Length: 330
Ligand code: ACO
Image 1 (cartoon, rainbow, N blue to C red):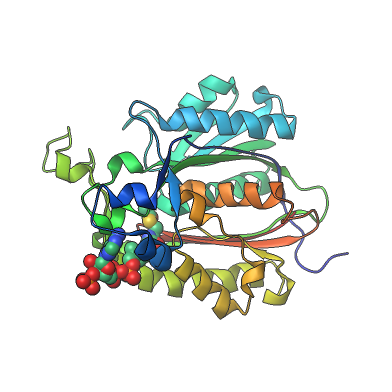
Image 2 (image 1 turned 180 degrees about the vertical axis):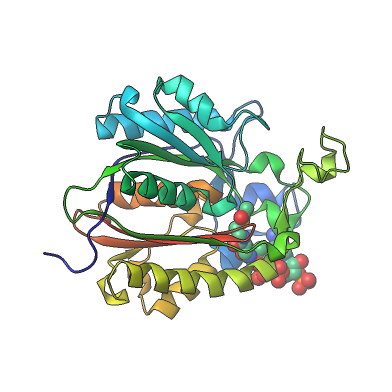
């Protein structure tokens, strides 16, 4: 019997999708007053994948979902719920989750979006685990998907260098042994909305529902967000590990939200985890918001790093503020 709590739910399939087009730091040097050295040293990002005009978030979700379903070997008709973390859905309404439902033929599922910025995937994982614990579902499809580059202000060098586009999906079902989600914690604090937001077509747009150009953009006070993120991520890591009945030394991999290498390094240091236990792919994708954790988990596993029986910790932080942490034994 392994150390730690018995999981309730387990991931049985994963899928990802991201655009082919790569925007490198040297490409960005031609658009704004920036340089590769600044971006790499301050963020860890070398390039990011960006969508072409006309592509939709649901396109990426559907591809990721199909891959996860195929790996899980699940009939889409047996999926009871589709929970999609996104702040960049195709429409203001309906949800992007119902578009996924229709495309994959999950006719028996209830489908809805979760708005929790970069924490959207962790919030969806929390819901899946809760639904399974309450015996309200047998299979849950969870997704984290974000096309943030269309809402980035390409003349604001402090934000436009940070983001990339992607989607990740997983199928979650009841755990049958000691492998699975050992803990998942989430939280929010609405006191700092001014530090990270996008008005978009929201009612804050002075009644003009066809959002004006300025309202479309993502606005962030990076310095302040950084300060909050480091503190909260450490707390999430400590809580998630304790709730799993483990200690930091039991963690094989930290697979965190890929927002900034310096934030990740600080979190690992505070947990006493060496950097060779930290999975990073931020250099290839930038910050893909709610897609970042499923994309990193997928790559860590497919690269043979995250192995069966190993235990991983993930922590996330995003606009809202929202945050979360999870410990999963693979
Ligand atoms: N290229 C060159 N110089 C730049 C750039 C750039 N792309 N961007 C900013 N600078 C300059 C600034 O103008 C400033 O110059 P000054 O000193 O002459 O005024 C200097 O670099 C330092 O700027 P800072 O903002 O202090 O840089 P910092 O080290 O804080 O890094 C960053 C900025 C990368 C944004 C960092 O603060 C960060 O990662 N914050 C957290 C982001 C995050 O985690 N967000 C949450 C998730 S996102 C979501 O939920 C949607």
